[in-house]
Image (cartoon, rainbow, N blue to C red; front, side, top):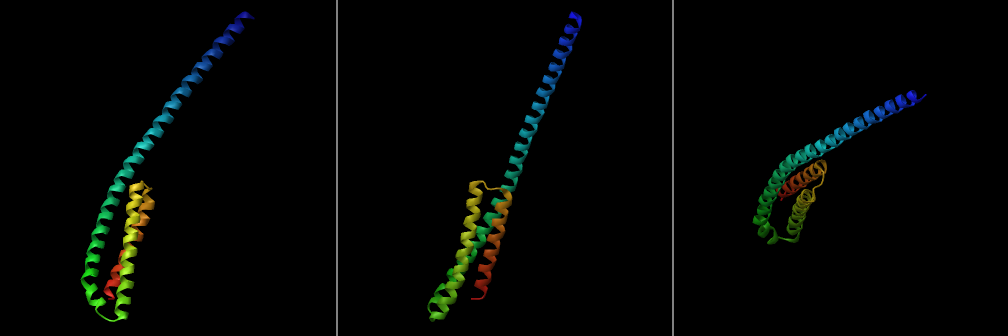
Length: 139
């Protein structure tokens, strides 16, 4: 009877040791996977945000060009009748909306928003800039 208890104790101890080693190894694997995921996600976000900053710079440049065009024709429309002023102000309002959308992109990038959200804001800003450009062409 004593021998069987000693054998049972040995096999139980061995089983606990093996299970402990398996748990330690699996914990290390899980921690390594989570760490790898975080690092690769960070690198991907940095790459995509670099592209997004480039697109933001392009949007700002296009906005500045369009704002300069608006300023160049401002005197012409303000020297006309009230209908000309209204038409100019309506077009200028579209330019103001485009500027607001561009600032929205800037704030999303500064806040570190997810890439897909920043991309949707960039698309919206491009649409608003196109609307402002079309409004200028209609002047």
